Length: 150
Length: 271
View 1 (cartoon, rainbow over the protein chains, first blue to last red):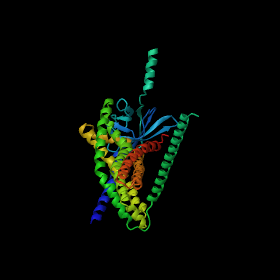
View 2 (tube, chains in turn red, purple; view 1 turned 180 degrees about the vertical axis):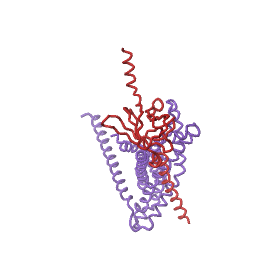
View 3 (tube, rainbow over the protein chains, first blue to last red; view 1 turned 120 degrees about the horizontal axis):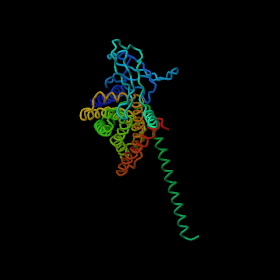
View 4 (cartoon, rainbow over the protein chains, first blue to last red; view 1 turned 90 degrees about the horizontal axis):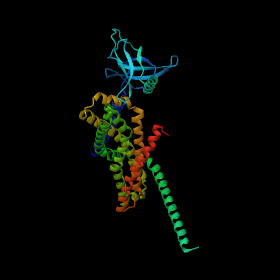
């Protein structure tokens, strides 16, 4: 009887440990995000990403609707090609524009989308044509100094 | 030569000799501990129900350590969220508090704090238990009966510790992250979605969670090893047991903190 109770206690302990691992895997590391059956993929070309990384957020009006899946360099035009996974429940019009933004003053980079007025929607594997690269602080300062010196 | 010169010569030689003796002692201690570890890692053959003894140790080391680990995890997570919020709010990025809490708990606080608490709660108990077995000559009695105490007593304890601490670490992390959510979301009013989404955007399963478990496994081996070795190596007197228990807690804590630096450097690939 006593050893039975012991085994039950130990079994519950080990199971709780395993459960903790599962909770961490799904809740903390977001294993379940951007699964193929719940999202569709869009591409966008940017001249300069400057700090945008994989798994960065894609937001629309401040609401996160997807993530950056992969970043590649197009060696013909030398621009960055960003692949994004977007929530299936969010249809985007074909004249949607994408820009790289910074959260707060020192925050991380994310992609901000703004929808247009077009009636047609972007489909899986379409490309967002209207993109705006992130503002590089050094370039801004350079332009400012250049314009002052004239 | 003047007599004072001879005296200095004498003191120097004596000091050198003492240093040599101490160094040899330390060396012998490490040798004995390594042999002890190798012997204790393997089960002997022909014992009845080794599994039952392992279950008993998992109960004693793991289940009985649960309250302190869980409560500590909860409070560590809560205080991290509070501290992080007050720093991050100055930059207007208080939404990142979830990510900060989760990363610091999974990478550092979880493995290190649970190992330190484990050393204090379970390690000291192990040393005292085995030390008392030695003082009451139970270990010698076993040897006379032809039972190897390293296999019979030490092996289940060592493996029990190695099984328990990673599980305790995982539970510590879960409680810490939910404790952080309690403070950040319910008390400080951070939007719940951004607390979890920021966390999920930055925490990686292999890079953070699995590496934390690897750290915890190493700590478990070292802490349990130190604890049972000091019990086995203790002077069989009441003072000797008390000294061995103190040595366990001190050495295990230092070993955890020093190893944590080494492991972090290796796992992050900084060197």
